[in-house]
Image 1 (cartoon, rainbow over the protein chains, first blue to last red):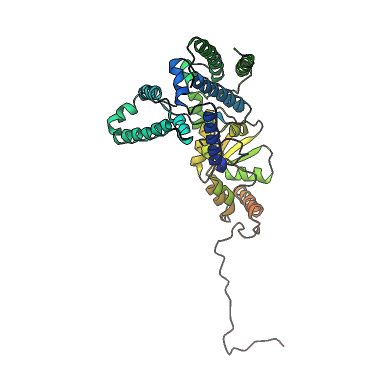
Image 2: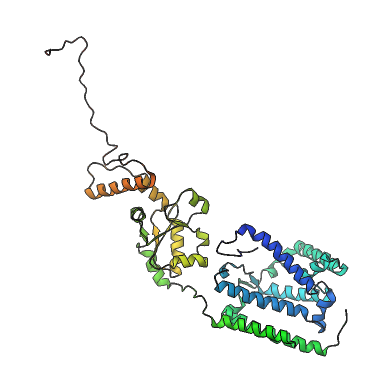
Length: 197
Length: 207
């Protein structure tokens, strides 16, 4: 767990790891119950017959954004203590392309592959194994990629600061965008031939 | 689209709109660098160990002592009435609220000046008011109040008065007796010449 859950000290930081395990289990349960352990369901995003992946992740993004900002304004969460992953633009773009290709080819992302492996799906287990081979190869050949890996460093950059707007306004725009996307995804889905799986 | 999704969408938009409309927390304004420089050069931020001690004894309600040392050191010893805010957590919003308390003189101290100066600089940069540093930190406070040194008998009356205050303060903090370090104590006293009767000498006179 990065940062205290309750900044007032109401809950001891010693509980953070317990919460991390519970939250991880909850995340896994949510993935499985959303059908994310099926690669055919996930791959539906690329073929237009099932947009559940985009819908779930967009919903998670807007709910957590709203939750963080409301909890922060109520003084229950210290927004300044959140760990923000530093941005390395070049490697993020390059990694995103590789991840996208892997996602479309394998039908899983790292989290969903673990979920599929946990319920005993063979394709999930193979993807999971392949992921570790990839991690091993990348680690061994890291000196070759090191320069690119650290290029385009922008520090802990928030997207709202790039646009010069407040986090609240950005969240509002994100919610509008998400609702537009939900509607658009439904519109496409109705026009694409349904696939039973 | 199903009705339940429409309701959910409306709820999300209302919640998001609420964030935009509701007054947000004011971000602390940063002090102008020129003002900060002038604050750094002037010495009014310092309060001496004697001044702090006097205010502790007087139970001054406007004094807020903030111990910047780690919690383990704070538990071992701290000035009465002080609160522990380790320097690495000084900018947490709940602590900023403490420093923003009106009508309080926030006095930082640690073992020496260095940590307190750092904290003072951070808070002053955040435009927080009435922030002070206890000059010399706990080390100087200990030397001044607890290990107060004796004065020569030729010391001025002002110094004698200050010394008396320190001795009384030491008694307040430690319970030690007032006569342990009296003014003039420690000076070599005149040697008393004892005249002894020579052995075998008879006493003259008397009964």
